[in-house]
Amino acid sequence: MAQSLTHAETALPADWRDLFALTKPRVMSLVVFTALCGLLAAPGDVHPVLGFSSILAIALGAGASGALNQWYEAGLDAKMKRTAGRPLPAGRLDPQTALQFGIGLAAFSLFLMLFASNWQATLLLLASILFYVFVYTMWLKPRTPQNIVIGGAAGAFPPLIGWVAATGSIAPLPVLLFLLIFLWTPPHFWALALFVRSDYAAAGIPMMPVVAGEKSTRRQILLYALVMAAAAIAPWPLGYTGALYGWTAILLSAIFVLLSVQVGTRTTGEGDRMQPEKRLFAFSIAYLFILFGAVVADRWWPL
Amino acid sequence: MTDEPDKPPFDEAEYRRRQRSRANMMAWLLGALAILFFFITIAKMQIFA
Image (tube, rainbow over all chains, first blue to last red; front, side, top):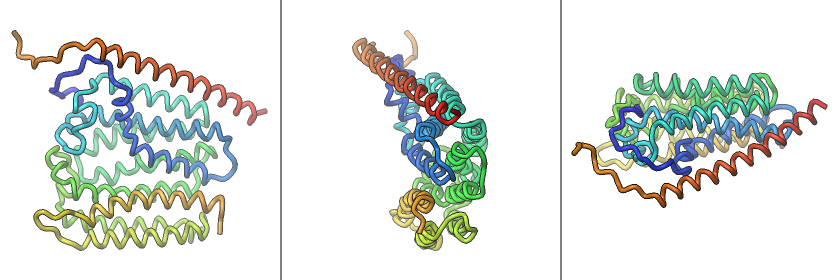
């Protein structure tokens, strides 16, 4: 936890770049993109200013979640190579500032969402922030190897919020998009966890490869990839999207499953460079970007 | 004497630089928000008119 940090607190005011880094900008890019796709895929026209403001609110909400996550996990981050350079474990920012920044940003994002769109989207945004901070970060992550599976719901909210911000109601397509991200999260994070396993073990985080071992993790990556592929393709046969999305989903999901088969069926020895795992992790990011882009393309320029 | 680790000497120039940088950033953000809120209000007036 942030309070348990032993490094000296800096007396200097926080640099804005460190506050920005606290929001996890790279994660935010995926959040913004999927939220935008949810908003653009929704029926009807959204006023550009209100649409922009809603996406900004979602981005700020995601940034607030990231900041509160880093505040809570500063002690753990200090133990992992991948995260030791973050502003809190590196001592460039004091925990109190990070906490105030996170809470302030969360409150402002909710206010902006309420002002720009509707209470339904605001409620969903609030639920996603609370879920990420309390359910995922504080409860699940340090306790169970299923942390990513259930916690994946937090990252699955943005397209749903985008859609609800545009329409004021929930429909089957954004629920399927929610399901897609929910099922995509485990293979995506477990591929990462396989090649940074020692980091997680050092920090005592019960990620699947640390607790259940590599073999079981690989099998589950493949299993989730198969279910995810079915969920990705489902909107087409169910009639919620057209052929443009359908064929894109089939092609990309086939590649995803193939890469997962490579990861799921192999065994590694000492000094393995984990190339298939790194390839699956990189492709999984592109997969989600392209697939969500296809949802929007299908809505605006159907085949 | 205490057991506390040696703190780096207080750098007032860096302190002022960071203060100025944050104040400038805050001014830009508040300005941008005022403009955004103005346009949101106009957009809502158009929708509900």
